[in-house]
Image (tube, rainbow, N blue to C red; front, side, top):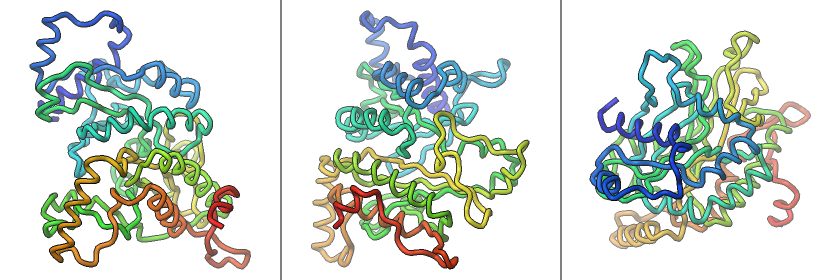
Length: 377
């Protein structure tokens, strides 16, 4: 872990463990505000709407508060408590950590428009949706940490001012042997018929190859499950993406995980599942041939189609196409309408999940719940 990552980790842990020790009605003194302002890496963080997220954890997802807090501690008292760094991943420059027990993933939101969109436009609908649908496949966000005071680190971009704490759908992988961990597969899936400017503009030179390769995954197989499992998946995703459409969110993805079923073949060696209220596609769905176990959640729903950055990107791409450098490219995922993106997203899921008919042959399309069918017709 680099010095920067260690200081960011320390800031996050301090916000988690010391939040109850601070008086929210007592503002920091002048000296404290000056020291915070000149912080470059070690920002002073706080929990955003702490009681709201605590209600989600305890009442909606049935996550015990003590168990949640313990996840942020080192299993060994002899060792320093640090988050586990995964590195700086993705085109946005986000920094990723996991808790020491791997139950939770922490992702920074370095881009202002992403955290602003989530706080101001999506958070309340997200909470209401989760209260009504505790088994929703929108990724469970258990905390939002933010910097309540301005600082040089946030202005210069040396340290993120916002961090999400969310469930780690890969929980259980680290408990497997090293050779078994290599058998776990992950796919970050989006509709592939969109044009991704980060990958294609200027000959693809806006991002390194290692990042561009992760922008759009392709699932090289089919998710082979029973008709009930597919109908449940499509129905759940239809409900989940509706609130994203109403909030004008686009560019979200289906994060699909699969690992060999043999890893959970015996009761003693069963792979542990993510914490909280269980749901089949979160804890694992067994494939029809009993070869794989699948997990899935929706990730990265922080880009609004009418955001200033999306409009600016539209102008860039229009200019690029006008000069015939990008001739033939389709619409961009980040500037299309939220309704169209949702339709293509659900169609993509329909295309990768395969069931069998009564004769044992791969079936056709399974449509969404009744209200969705009526709207389509």
